[in-house]
Length: 99
Image (tube, rainbow, N blue to C red):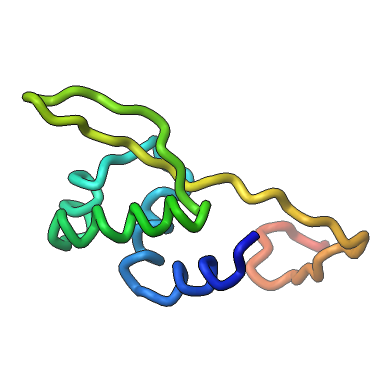
């Protein structure tokens, strides 16, 4: 993994917003992302391309639309690394009763 690319990918606020929008959603196109994030299409397209280069986003499918090709992307699934340690748990916000 190229850690420099990964670090640079996460430094721009729009890239973080793109990753958040793509997490757990169906694949989205830069056009839909630009509307959702209220950012210029060219800017969103550039940042999506950089996220693809960093491996955080992947191209899922393409569709022909009036002589152009629309691309659809999703966030890549990161494998969870296990350390053998259980995460700390808290009873704060728990809806379970301890009576």
